[in-house]
Length: 312
Image 1 (cartoon, helix red, strand yellow):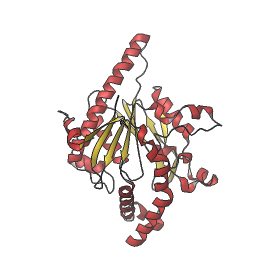
Image 2 (cartoon, helix red, strand yellow):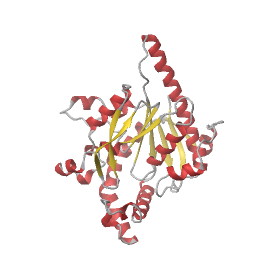
Image 3 (tube, helix red, strand yellow):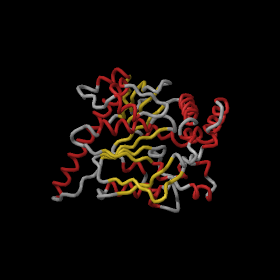
Image 4 (cartoon, helix red, strand yellow):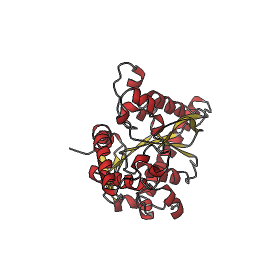
């Protein structure tokens, strides 16, 4: 069966960087990478620079198309942001991917304003999840306020001057009341989260949501992939590191885990993965991989081994 993707190994993909300059420093990279994900400058050069070049070409083509439409209609409406969706499992490194792409894309001259929004802000507050009996399904599709998320994307894509997104705190593990991230007509908006490639849920009680899905608003989509056994290893490693960082904060929702031994932490983290994150990956996240326009396939060392680009 023919694949809808063209597959590149690292060497082939790296060659597509062409003459794209490296516009990120070692210090910047250290601030952008995840807690247990040591990103090398070689990885940025070989994988993310070619990707930024590809996305820059897509953005340029889309901007020309918008301008042609405005010329045809004889109006000068506000600019419409190019929206990139980044999906993948918990602990796979999609947040690092999003931050690196945000930095690289903002250095291209034709789209200097690049914003990043995570879907965590569109989770229902813990009180709602508790009332519905789905607190242990946080991150599953039903734990998100899909109507609010779609309204946000629709407003951004409509070119509104300001659009607000709720803010989520990983420290308190909940939505922060009366705190917002304001998006003001960026050239590019990167939306990162577990659920960005989800197909329709088929909610018979809400015809609008059944007809409109999140990915309808995206101009380009990326899925960060790795084998589950590797992601589990990264998740456990991160959980252990958090004992000395976020978990040690007295206001942390997970402060009860700060004093766990290595053996206890491994057992707890593996249990959480089995019950929640692994189940969500297999049931809801991994099946959406085939909907992405580009797939970054990672190996055990967190380095991208191959890149798949959907054929046009």
